[in-house]
Length: 223
Image (cartoon, one colour):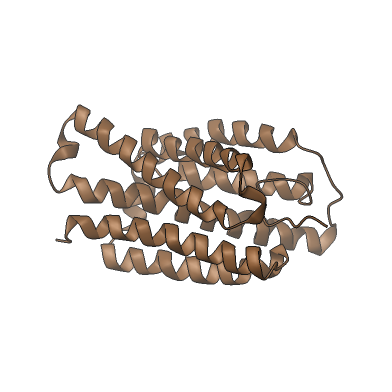
C-alpha cells in the first residue's frame, strides 16, 4: 500500500519536469521540433515508466476497463480538436518518407507522450491517492475526485506549456482548454484511450495540415 500523498508528489514532479524540459530545450536552447522531441520523449518517457513501476499500474487492466467508452470518447473529442487544427492557417508539408516519419515522430509518439504526461498520470495518481480513503466509493466522492483529477491535469498542462515562449500569455488558454477536454473525456469514460487517441489524432492532423503554424505542435520560434 502506497502512502496516499506520494501520488500527489508524482503530480507535482510531472509539472516541474514538463516545465523544465520545455523551458530548457525550447525556451533556452531553441531546438527545432524534431531535435527537441529527443530529450522530451526520453525524459518524459523515463518518468512515465518510473511511475508505472512505482505504482504497480497494470497497463492491460487500465486500457481494457470501459475500452469501448474510451474509443467513443476519443472519436468525439478527436472531432473537436481536429476541427480546431483545421481552422488554423495551413502550411506546406513534407512528402514521402519524411511525411511518414513526421506522422510517427510528431504525430503518434509526441501525441502519446503528451497524453500520458498531461492527462493519464495526473488522473490516475489523483484517483489512486483518494481511493484508499474510500472517498471514491460514493457518487459525490467520485465527482469530487474527478474534478480534482482534472485540476491536477490542468496544473501539469499549464506548467509544461509555460516553458514554451509561445505560451507565455493569453495563448496558454488554448492548450489548457484542449487538453482539459481530453482529460475530461478520460474522467467521464474511465478509460485513458479517450485522451490518448484524441491527442494522437490532433497531432497527426497538425502534421498533415502543416506544422509551421499549428499551435498544437510546439515549439515554434518567431523570426
